[in-house]
Amino acid sequence: MTAIPASTGDQTPRPTRRLGLRIVGAVVAFTFCVAALVSCLQIYSAYRTALIDAQKHFTDIENSYLPSLAAGMWSVDQGRIDTLLDGMAQLPDVGFIELKDELGQRWTRRHSDYRKDLLSRSFPIIHREGDELFPLGELTVALMSAGIETRLFQTAKSIAITTSITLFSTVFFVLFIVRYWITRHLETMADYAKKLDLNNLDSELKLTRTERDQPDELGLVVNAINKMRLSISNDLNKRNHLYQELSVYRNQLERLVSDRTIDLEYKTQQLEIKSAELVEQNNELDAYAHTVAHDLKQPVSTLIAASSLLGKAQLSPEKQQQLADTIQRSANKMRAIIDSLLLLANIRKSENVALTSVDTQHTAMEACARLQSFADQQGATIHLGEHWPKVFGHEQWVEEIWMNFLSNALKYGGASPKVELGTKTLANGMIKCWVKDSGPGLNAEQQHEIFDKFVRFDTQSADGHGLGLSIVKRIALRLGGEVGYETAPNGGSIFWFRLKSAGEKTSP
Image (cartoon, rainbow, N blue to C red):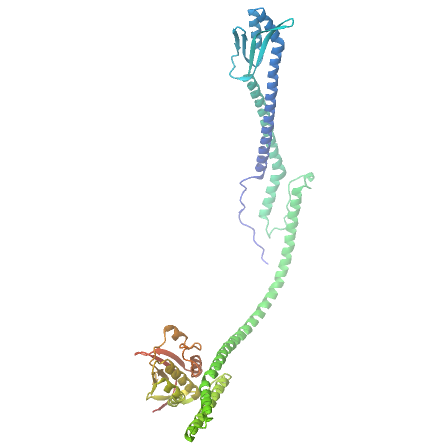
């Protein structure tokens, strides 16, 4: 068995998104989110601490400055008041101070960085003399946010620097670890798998690692790939052995199949021939049933009518003799029809039909005689031609063809039908026998179906004569001829059949 050749070129696409970078990216994103959250919590904690520290200034002012300020205002010591206000203005985070006495006089101090209030508080100034309290005014102190914002910015800056250094250090460390422990070994395995084919299954996959690193997941993958390589090698050897045995069996099977195919084709052809013959015989059996129903109806009806009349005593001897003659003719005709049907049934069993010389004039006149009473009922006139050659066929069958065509002409030839019977010798040695009527003719659809199945286009005509046009077609084909229909030039229908000429002619 021929091994599959190794690839001649590197068709494996290089990775556009490396695993190490993706891992590092995920670590960086996660670390950044955690660092940002922690930084926000630290800044918020520093902000809360700054607010608490700023509020302590209110306590210091209330405890340290308000008593002295109340004493200075009580003694109207302007220098002392200014000194105390300047001292409070120097306190951290104090942005604005306003002192207002009861007379409406105001003293204010404003820090140069004061923009807006962070916190503000008003303190009433009260002087105590014994048990009496004397309100002297009100002190308003506002803390500014500039100092706190500066300290918070410094804190955030310190946190950002520390976090950035930690983050980048972690990134480079993780990238180094992923590269050293994972991705370089994955690339080695990818290169090995890319070069592995049926020609170098003996090459083992090995990674550049220490013994301490071997029992991890990568070691399991390497062992699995090596086991797969050995399994493929063993399966390939077994397949080569089986392929050799299969080649021997295949040659034997091909010879056997060839012999069986030839035998099966022959039997199939024979079966198709038998199937076609069976279909044809079934069609003839169906027509045979129609034949019995149609051809025996008229003689039996005649026998019944004549027998009924003979039972009457008023008939004269001459009339009785006529009825007896009618019964005799009908019985003879029934016997002839039965003999003909038996011959039609028996001919199915014969491979070949014995053809004899048939007088077309005699068979045509017999058909006219059989249908004379029916023609009288229709008020029809029947005209026979002058040229009557002999043909090869079977006399009773040829008569049945004439009778069927003549019966249709009498039924469908219109009121008082005019019917013509005749023959014509063709150049190819065939004799064309035809029956022409004066009826309305058939349309295209009726012409297509007329010889294919047993049909009756005039449902008002209950009486039937002949074997049926489908049987006529089978008879003509069995006799080596054919049947057809055509429209007469001056109106009416022409039913015809063609048989081989017997070379003899008769005259009326």
